[in-house]
Amino acid sequence: MSDKKSILPQAFAERMRRLLGSEYESFAASYESGRQYGLRRNPLKGSEEAFDRAVPFPLRKVSWAREGYYYDAESRPGRHVLHEAGAYYIQEPSAMAVAEVLSPNPGERILDLCAAPGGKSTQIAGRMQGQGLLVSNEVMGDRARALSQNVERMGIANCVVCSEKPERLSSFFPAFFDRVLVDAPCSGEGMFRKDEAARAEWSPENVAMCAKRQALILEEAAKMVRPGGVMVYSTCTFSPEENEGTISAFLQNHEDYYIEETVFEGIFSPGRDDWTIAPGAGIEHTLRLWPHLIQGEGHYVARLRRKGQETQLSAAERQQWQDDVHRRGKENDTARTENWKITGDKKLCKLVEAFLREELGIDRAWMARHPGRIVKFGEQIYLAPEEMPSFDGIKALRPGLHLLTEKKNRFEPAHALARTLLEKDTKRRRALTEAEAAAYLRGESLNCGEERGWTALFYEGYALGFGKASGGQMKNHYPKGLRISL
Image 1: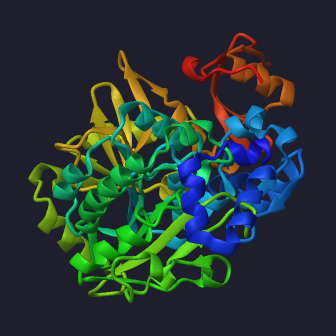
Image 2: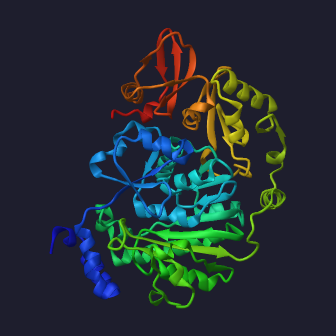
Image 3: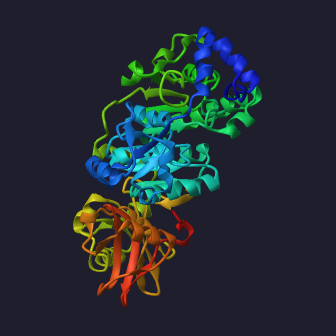
């Protein structure tokens, strides 16, 4: 037996042999081949044509993901300026299928319940195009912070990053979301080829524990889907207990949900009805991604629909949902300026808009493209998605787009704001060479001419951050915690 085969836990290999029968040898042989490497273009940052011109290494399209590509390991895209600029997100190709099955649309309310490190959230955000509300949640604090950093790097404005237990969120958002993604914590069998830790931690007992935890998470997630809404459940494991077993048990207890067919049934393998405790629930319409049948790792995906009104809610209906779910008088007492809503302090909103236009040269079109309401937490000023009912009682690491910091009666622009900019959005911009961009990411100042004031710095059309020009020097405002030598 080769080294690749021998790395599989013996009990896992024996179980898979029983499950797959004659197909097992092909499955086991896939661990002898090299893994596939993938990245996903960020549509919030520009067109596919501009992306193709900017990327200096070869790519091949992933057939099931609109923005997905394979790359060669020697390309090392994680060590490139374009990665730091949020031009793409490095993501395993099979994992890209999950958000495709969710099929998000602009203007919807969407929850990614187990979101860290952010691959699926950032993919969802790309499809939403800055419209609507994306709530990305991660219960573990360190992972939630990594999620928040990836949301910022990819230039996402309409995302609220939370760190709450599912039962807390379900009490806050009952029947609230159009779509909910549950990419559940699992035993990680589908990642054995790429993740040594997943192999080392595997045991039959861990599989059973994961299945119990998944059932509890799914129970809370189901409470947050509006009538007619969609819930997608996914794992990166092969075990029937965590996949077909979890879904069939859920459906036995939830007659208001049913499995929905998808366009991917001709691309991926069907779920196994004979691996459930209650055959006949439509499990064959769930999806299995096998590493010996596709160019990717192992995944399982099920798309569920909640019975009820299946059309998108009108603006009036959405407002009614919000009023019924969260009666927050002070949050609903808003005034509107030319571009945004403001809670309480209309003067602050006007000052923010003036700073963006006059000091940063940001065009009104950018403001129109990013609707929301201004909220202030201490010295920090955010643009919160209008659809977010309230922040009372929610642990929000990122309550929307961080716009500005107020310092001694002056404003400083937030790094997150720069990441949302396209070149057309601001008159105060400068294009950097590759050497200048690398120096900027290291935290170095740059030479400049007669420029003065805040300047958005771009590389190949992708925003890196802000600098402040004075006396022939562009002072570096790239956050110290993010600085990197490429």
